[in-house]
Image 1: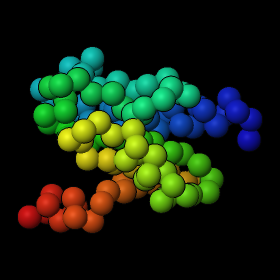
Image 2: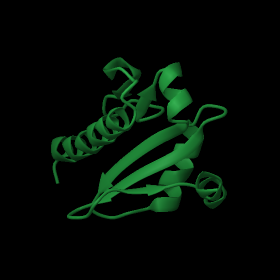
Image 3: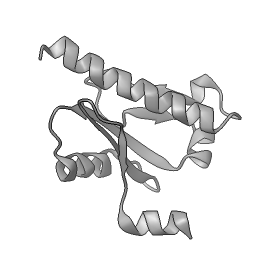
Image 4: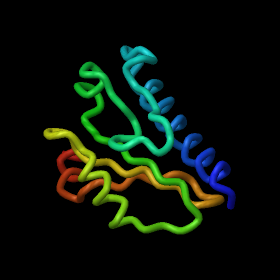
Length: 111
């Protein structure tokens, strides 16, 4: 796959996640949730302080043919600002996107 095609797949996933966050929290404005440019360091989805109050996750997005979950989750942890929960969104070819979070964090969510 060409580099441009690969970046387009990643960009499309980031934009999907951005749109899902904005749909889930109608109080947020489009400027509160932004998809970063491809190749930029740090979080893939940038959140305003208001958005962080509603969606306390630091999001990393990966759209690839093969999956390396633990390495990618570590990247999400590394890029996560203090106090934010790392969240990894992955998508394999011809599959639905999945979300990966720490088990303890998941259990806190379902309590």
